[in-house]
Figure 1 (cartoon, rainbow, N blue to C red):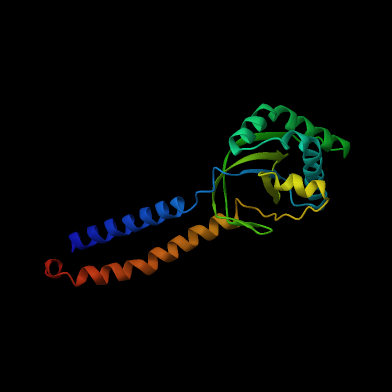
Figure 2 (cartoon, one colour):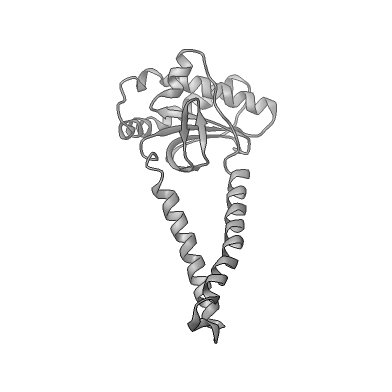
Length: 203
């Protein structure tokens, strides 16, 4: 019986590792995009409106600097060199509306759930992104694709239509619940298969 439990546990762990590996291998797009991610101080209407003001100001200030960017790597280098300016621009816009929130501007790799941007579908994964956090950064966020410069194209045409959600909460919980459900459904099948193996029937 002990060997049965050991084998079942080993196979279950193997299935989980394989599933995770396959899901990562199926997303070759992570290094081809650089995203802009603006997180509001809170979900109050005032803070959400301010988040959009910061968004518009950033797009307006930096649109020309990204006209000649041809690769994601070049975009990351450009952003990294301008982090202080991104922070200053956001801070200045916030002060215009009588707020004194702290601003954090970071270039890094952040986990995103699956997202649809018009005709572009980006799978869930870890993407390069410029993350602008306003104040306590506990509100719903806004995002777009900074490279290729899709959000700049929309901004120049006054056609801003992006998705926004709290990526750090419900999507993470949903993923964990689905993984747990998959594991619970798979274990009985594994046990059934192992019980049919003659060498294990008399243990």
